Image (cartoon, rainbow, N blue to C red; front, side):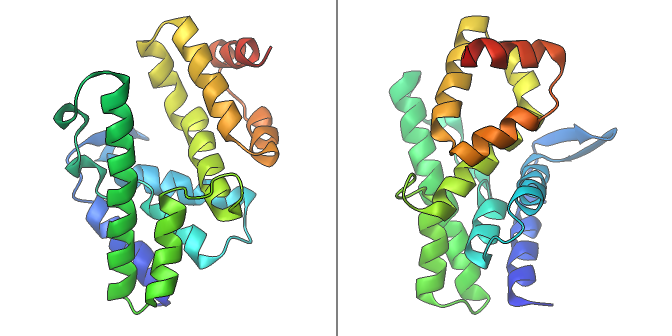
Amino acid sequence: MTQLQNVLNAIDTINEADLNTTLVDGVNQPKELVYGRYMTACLEKYWPQADEHLQIAVRAQHVKRWQLKRVDFPAGKQGYLTWRKELGIFHAATAKAIMLEHGYSEDSAETTAAIIRKEKLKSNDNSQTLEDVACLVFLQYYFDEFAAKHKEDKIIRIVQLTWRKMSTQGQEIALTLTLPPHLARLVAKALA
């Protein structure tokens, strides 16, 4: 097995411990394990030339996410933003430690960690691609559940914010996704 595959397997092993589950093809599976695999599948489909740093970053985007619970942070927008920032730092540190355990250099592991922290988002192609993949996976697998919980004006605002975070390439890919009619209508309204 390659060094890369060993790291991806180690991330999956950690995420198999997630007690939060999601239903996939009628079977409950660990939520973050499923998310990591969706992320990798999206990357492989649209960015097959991705380097190892990005491949690991994509799989580790939510590694061990259940450790930092939203309820442990203050309510409101500022609490949410603090939680999200802490998650990025936590996921990056976890991925870096896994890479170091599997023989990657400090520089290589830190490069991956910086991608996960989404440093230099608009100027670092790998950080931007990670953001694009996360947005595409959200639209494809999680948007329907999110939309069911929120009012239309909030959904439209979130789609607009998501759209601004994406690259032109990511936006073009998003427009090719086949969404259920009620979600496609919301996206169309957001982009009008």
